[in-house]
Length: 283
Image 1: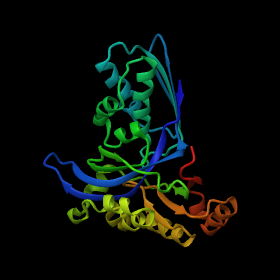
Image 2: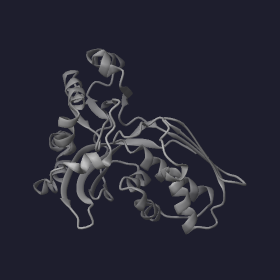
Image 3: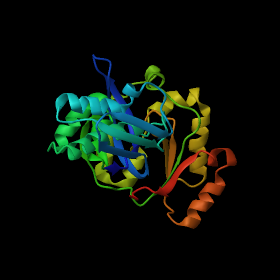
């Protein structure tokens, strides 16, 4: 069985408060980018094997979110036997695009189908939550307003599917620890993204602020330079996704001609960082 775990972008990411356990309460809009994806293949076998190609994530095999999801599912459902897993990574690591979380969520979905477990979507979301706050979103895999630690999801209309999106990923990678080290809390922002959603596309884009830019951009000014270049190239909206370091721009012009003009306006250093350029809602 083969699936294509896609990435996501964040439209706004407000850090509302901090919990006693150290986790932060957030408000964001998760939006899937179906066209930028990994390739995941799982098949029953007489022994377990995990193979990875592409943008390989360094570290022990057992730390990979795909393997961790397999082990977690197997601990709940012993009827899950040995499998061969092949993962080809096209979504870069340390980008704020949720590639690892998507891989884990799609692993759970595939194991549910391969071994005919009959688990509901909500049950799968509950299972993958310990693997990462983004994982439940990828079980639903549709535009969602999110709060809590990012696991309280409310599906929303696909307001932005008509935009062309250009995603750039510089060599810079941002760890979660670095991203949260200097973060400022914004309790006054609670609920504003949800209010904007009810008012439509323009209100949403006007309200969509990523609080991590406030602390990450001074440390990595090249990221702000990319954002500004996207805006100069005609983006209606540009932002860092998640805690970075990918920067994306949304463009009204979906024509091939428009895309070429936009790319020419990016200087050669930034243009080399483009990892995706297509209609946002394209599957």
